[in-house]
Length: 626
Image (tube, rainbow, N blue to C red; front, side, top):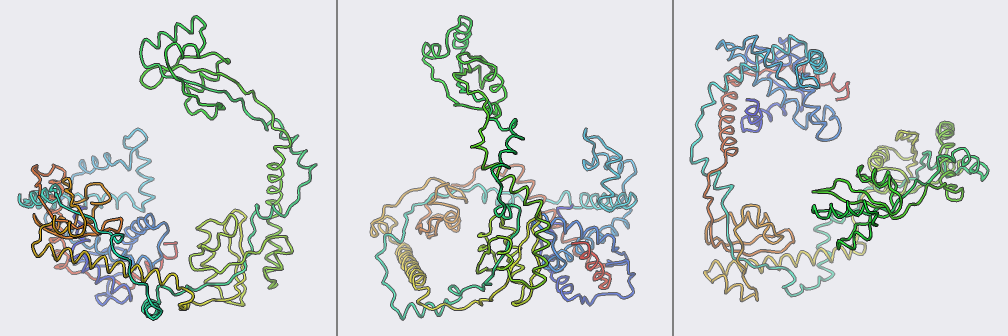
């Protein structure tokens, strides 16, 4: 039933209603508004109200779903553009119309059945899967339902399901439709084909100056520069501030002594292993182990080659069985442990004992760590000083010089890719900074951009460089390449059209191919997705399926080549569609019938919307961050 409602939203009546609602909502001026409707009512279907609370709950759910898709909560304007308010009202109106009908028909659900539905709902299950009262209460609270509202909603949903299943469950699906689906999904084609690429064509004429100028004039939008903001930037992060802090050798030595016990290289062992795939090999190695025979001798005697894992610390060995065995052996010893499909022998040939990292090797890391630590301690104070200097309208260059920080200069575009010159600024941060730069005004103090975690950016907007048309001298190479590519494309299209004309006139496919120094190839049978090769891909396959046996055509594949073809044979699907497909077709038919019924039912009842309540509700939601 819910699938039917979703299908309704995609149907023509649903789209018409959605357009109607969008037009009204876009201006917040729906004409079908009853001023007499209660302020707590968002809309009325027939004589039944849709409450503001019901709308808010459904709207919140839709907004959350949209946020998961786009990665952020849409604003009310964005939600309106996405059609969320109209979709919510449409769904609630459809449910209300069906609820009224099922109530008139005295459909219902017993308390016992309702209890079973609740206990079987996995949303309310404990960690063991059984119904949990506390979870039930918690989920309802998070969803904004009282118990009364939840059970009332479940009763109405059960009535709608009873109605849909009772009236439409046995709607027959014509066998012809099932056969068409089976043929569509299962038929295959065999084609004769050859490939025509631009490499087989003579070079096109080089464009003249007049032609280049004319092309640039006609396609100036493709060569127009984008607006840029010439900007000076200052960034303050612990890592950047650390570069301005000097750490003495004495401080490094003292920190080394303080942390010396933790500055070690762990023990490493040279590990070898070999699979013992047969009972005979297992027995040979067990006997050798008992007799004290070396691992290498056993390998040689049984004509085996070991796999050398090299020197590994225990933490670097992800196979715990292997790590435990290897780090329990002495050099020259081996152990037999379980392996994939049998046993394996593990040996250790050498051991590098744990060692202390000398001061010379640790000094750079210690110096950097101390500098960053001190920078974090100083960040708040430096931040306050920079903010005071910014408030006094000090330029970025002077502030940076005062604290020994770098100034970054960039002609920033709206995407902010140029801000990659600032160390430690991620792609998402670049977008935020670029947005702030494009919102700023020249000669006005711009606000601090906080990126979190003691990371801040300031900028001075020095000049707005507007978008402009470029001259031919500036983009000559690009224009030449574009004209050449266009002419090559046109020449290839003309060649393909000439080939198709010859085929349409009745010239045999092989003769046409030979006249172009091509050799036609016979494909393997393929479906609508192609044969899996780069030549006959989905685009070519779709073109081949556009006609029957003898159909000729051409299509560009993913490599940019034109595949000229003639359908040689249609291989019909000899099997009926599988049960899953048949069920899908049947459900689609029933959903469409149900959607048409609900549309008529709702239209007959009439939908009226309380514009004032809708405006207030959307404004309220915008205040909560939706």
